Length: 479
Image 1 (cartoon, one colour):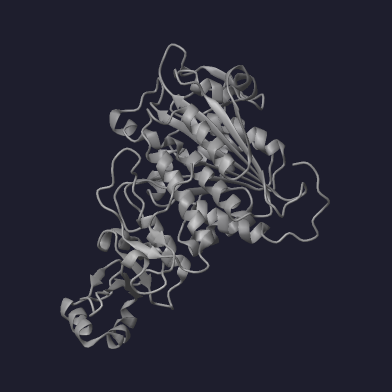
Image 2 (cartoon, helix red, strand yellow):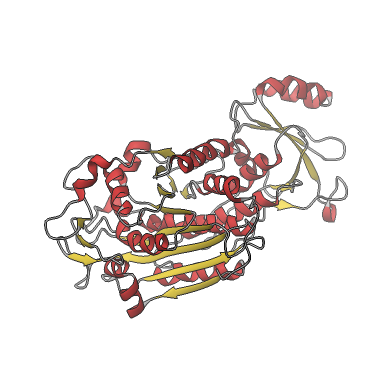
């Protein structure tokens, strides 16, 4: 389940490296340090660097002539970019398969490792690699960062996998595989049991020949007790979204294999939490469905029952993600978690407001909202808070059911969707909803075109700050 990260290697005993392979020297510099670096180089290398006109622009690379032993120096420009992104240019910007050792001690090891690892990713499950990436010697103290890279690769693979190869059954199986990798308990609910326990999930998936499922993973850190904080994660796992009877136009449907990006993000976050062995209890719920059209599919103005007992009028069959999440959130909130987090590719309105790189965050607790936003800025994994504006709540009123799944108004679509979800969290005091895009429209350093995991690292940092130190743990009890 967890992908093998093949772009890092262990430190070699000498410059020639394992099996005689040369390990070259890598420098990473901002513009203000370029002259100092030049003065440390051999005269020939210094002259070549100056001849090229290299200015240390972010993500720019220059390779200098080899020395007498065949060892080359490469220089990566950092520009004014303080994030990990410039390092993402290295894996495919350096000669294929070459090995490199970072020799700039002032550069943060985790920053370099994260950027290099994210930049080395390509989706290769169905097509041989066109070329091998360069490799970077593993830097001391970066085990947690390597685990995060592996989790993000896993999530990217899931989003990039074609929908004919990743349906509800396969997505649920991926949750089970993640649990097996981390010695967690897992279960899959389907059939009559699903219809009874998660009727809204069942209603969304009813139109597809590929039956819906809910996958659940439960885990407890080695330092956690039965009284330790419960972190509850819920992910929208719509493996393909036609829009149902409110059919999407072809251009809007083209990338709908990514509509399970929220599930992939929560799975990646769960993997990070387990890899770092945080002293918490963790529950992950993924609603695995396909929104299709058939004689069994839900129709506009149908009324469905939800797990909470509330009835929902279907104002639009393309607003199915909130129906999947509402059952999961209702169950999760009943367990009174210390924090309840969901992620979903929920609304185009969020993309219109914030663009593809800024996930919208909704939160009912100012403390958690501030922690996640600050963590996002520090980790260069940003989110942007939008309001749970109570003045729009009655836009969801229905004449025939407890509420409608959409508003008749065309404004504030992301806020209205979040307000819909808020109806199902039973006044849980610490709830975070992430409305994300989960896709890179074009390749950039550390962000290749295709599926993307957004906000997971930011949330991980906030969880670590809040829960990493547990004082006076209570006697153990059942999870």
